[in-house]
Length: 94
Image (cartoon, rainbow, N blue to C red):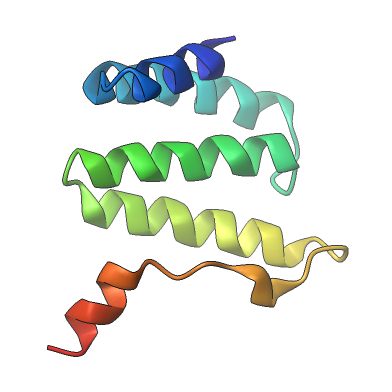
């Protein structure tokens, strides 16, 4: 429920409020679900997106890394399906 509110706030452009709501949503899901659960991974990636919007890139990268590792640990998921943020690639080329 909290995660749904965070998504709604994000869609309305209320990014700071969405980020505030995503933290408890993630904490609750982490306590209830195994690390590779698709719902938990979705919440982690949503929070990482919000962190990037808040210019908190280092925290976003760390959370994305944890999500990537959890997803890679799942045997039924192809590790090569990750999407690369083109802005990171542009920064590496400079």
